[in-house]
Image (cartoon, rainbow, N blue to C red; front, side, top):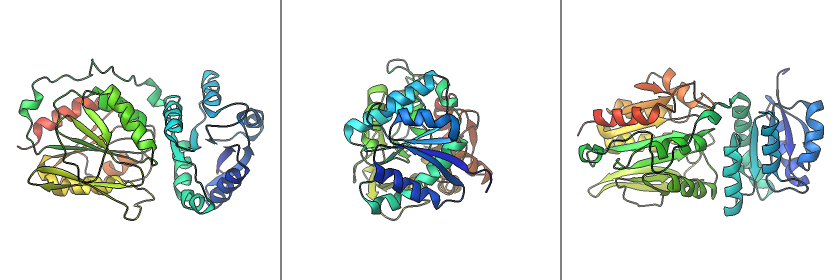
Length: 352
């Protein structure tokens, strides 16, 4: 192929550099054009190598990945970046900062050669998504907790206890959620989210959203009963589904096989929500690479729910929403800025 995605791997570990290079060489659409053991060397190599995407560790000698990314953006360099780093709780906070600086994706650094092999397909997808990404999300302002974008003070009294909101996202989704969830008013039915995300990092994302949002936000546990004013985020490496019981909707976490290289997968959540909530289900599909969520949206539509998808104009990667739109299962397409209003309008249409 003459138009391969050119990748520069930046990591202080020789083992990780070699392993990432080896797994990416298996994909004919990707070419690793160079490696660097710290950002200073990477900056020297970039003008000659002209990479399309960087893979970037966070903790490195001489200059950390966050400082490097901040310098790139300050200089106007918008090269797509995929973070591959050790996601301890402290590292997860830094990874969130990297996303705020425009990194496209965060993946957990493997801790063994076997894990690196398993990371290969997911890393290749992340690099392809990054190569297709835009920097549109930088124009979206995150609302303050006390000033939600959409206000509906009487909405809670109008909502049936059986209404359910499910949201799916991938590349660019953490920042999309950082806008969307805080923009929603208090008093809404339960919200359940699948974001393609590594373990540990999912809890940091939930904690950050909880600080910003009108509702309580936390990482989902198995067997949890859903409530109004509660948003649950699927933990990394676990599928999240919901079932209907006499007490309400209850979560279920499983580690069944990956779907489209993803665990959690949006399709698992959407299909279970459609089965459990039927005409009371509202499904929202945000930015992301691939087609995860499209088949699940088809089930939501088939069983009488309402479906929304993010418009290409605001998507970082217009993959998952496009797949659902092309399948003909989306009731309304809206930009991220329009999505809070679209959600409230759709909730009003759901059957009691």
